[in-house]
Length: 160
Image (cartoon, rainbow, N blue to C red):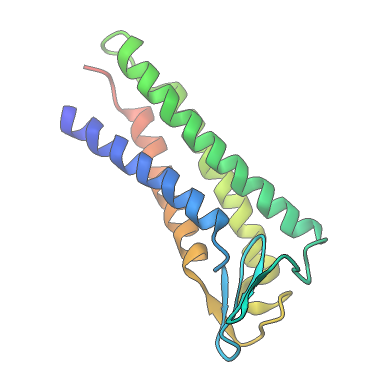
């Protein structure tokens, strides 16, 4: 049981770190022919990054930014609540609060990445029409899977 809790804790920390990296890195869409990339915050080329996104004023991008920040916040809150419950909760109880908070994080990731996929996947809406997904986009989908698994495991596990 201790090994299972420790491994869930490590995966949860890794998920928090990957969420943070995927949100701040500017590699959501990568150009095939211009050697540039676009993220949630900046447009980067070989010459460097600038703060000008052609679609920065769109509500869809602002929603994606907000949901990704919320997912980081809920993931960290869930981690803190898990550690708190681990040391204060009575034996035999389940980690309901940690699991529910992590599932809210999962929901925020799902909404944010779904909006981004609908509006900007494949370079549509960006200046890169021949492009592919960058590692930030892929990391976010990996965090989506991990946060769901962690949330369900928190709901199922009991403190022994």
